[in-house]
Amino acid sequence: MPDTEKDKFFGLSRPFGLLAGAVFGFLGGIIFLSVVLLFLSKAGKDKASPDLAEFLLEPVAFSDLPGWGEDDIAAALGPFLLSCEQWRGRPENDFLNQLPGSYDFAGKAGDWRGVCARAAAVLPEEARPFFERAFIPYRVSYENKEQGERRITRKYEGLFTAYYEPVYPASHEKTEKFSAAIYGRPDDLIDVDLGRFKKDLAGKSVSGRLQGQKLVPYADHKSISVDGLAAPVLGWMDPNDLLFLQIQGSGRLRFPDGEKRIGYAGKNGHPYRAVGRELVVREIMALEDVSMQSIRQWLEAAPEDAAAELRHANKSYVFFRWLEDLPDPALGPVGASGLQLTPQRSLAVDRKFYAMGLPIFVALEDDGGALARLMIAQDTGGAIKGAVRGDFYLGSGDEAGEAAGRFRRQGQMFVLLPKNISANVADQGLR
Image 1 (spheres, rainbow, N blue to C red):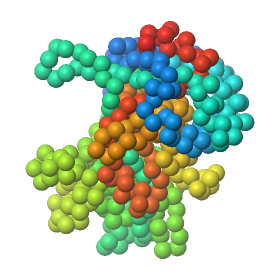
Image 2: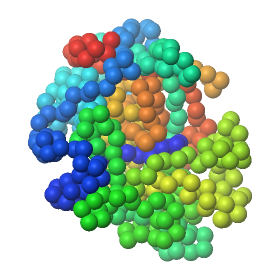
Image 3: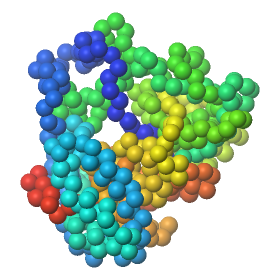
């Protein structure tokens, strides 16, 4: 995934008493016992408390969606039904968006029972009229504070990129070529969702390890690569290939004895720094020339110490796990939704704004030509931030990788909501 890494929300792996001590030490005592007790309770999801002006939803007609009539709407039915099946297994009063402090205009699992039941009976040729009858499209806009001015305007366009599932050669043993270890998740890595402790930290998290009763930062990319780590080693790769596998967050490894799928299992908590941007800052490459392909070409041509220095400029480090027994080998890896991704139809979004599973229509128009597509929100990523920001999952292999590496477009987003929950938008002041 360009400029990002997959963000999965794992359960805490240490007893709460130990974790509480770590968190109290880490946050300098600003978290009070009452908040901790709230965290322990099984009360409903916290309501969002962001500045509502930053995010608005404007109801429009389907005829207002650029390119709606040209898209193959039936292609979105499959991934939407996968999300419906997942919601069916959740309690009716569960908010669709489980991220503390997030917007919950998408309502609860029970609110989607009816529309999902109808979707299951829809034939491909009926897909477009089904969505038009059952949903209301909302144009997304956000607050735009113009730099250097006090003027605030609304903006409807945002950035869209793409990612894919790469295929890389790998080895079970360390060799001169395959010298970089692929680490599984370390046992001492702890993730803390700060939004559970303080509402204004919603969507933010820290990762680290315990040192006594305090949570301290985990080792950075360079330390892990140079000094090693007490963690499972899943295999060995070319260091440059491993960098791109970490950026994408998942992939396929081709060992001498067969191919295996691998996916995200956590990260060290250090901020992600795009190596492409680092090349620009160092005046090695112009911004308009930066792509996945140009970055790889530079890394492969550079002396190893220079290539290593650039890789280590990104202090973030991703850990992996094997993706075994996936339900459908034809689909992609598992996204943040817990579902396999559908090529060309699964979209990574900012979970602060969107629940996993929402239908989102994307309309892009720039020098790359028009592209209009009904997508399903089924993934997220560290650099996917904002109300109008998306990342297209394009599929597996070199062809998808070539397209993803050059995909950088501007466009609009329209979120589709069932008519029976349309009141939620007005109730929350989002229109």
